[in-house]
Length: 125
Figure 1 (tube, rainbow, N blue to C red):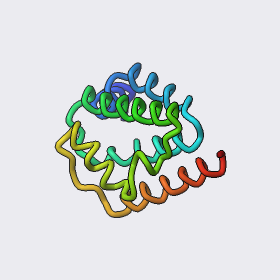
Figure 2: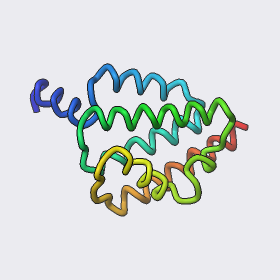
Figure 3: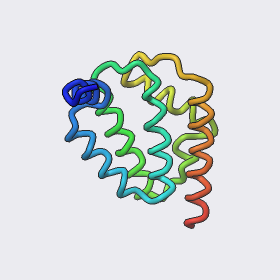
């Protein structure tokens, strides 16, 4: 894949690069458990059929907003995502796209990654 093709693909999937890097910088500033949760969550929507770069960029920015506010308020990860993170993210992502098939493996990876983030949050307290 050429740089031009890669750049077009990135813009199509995640939006303009500047928005993506600004979002990533915000995520890096989150406390460890919250950052790990966002990183686990951001992999999951890649299985959805992307609508457009702006819609996906807005979704990730809203995700960062949600976790920044939660971290500032001291809200636990489980209080954000509930008992079923797959259900939470399905509902969250539906606000931004039509969605698509998500393999069972991706659902399991999300659940396990959020459990590890919750453990990291608990050990940091």
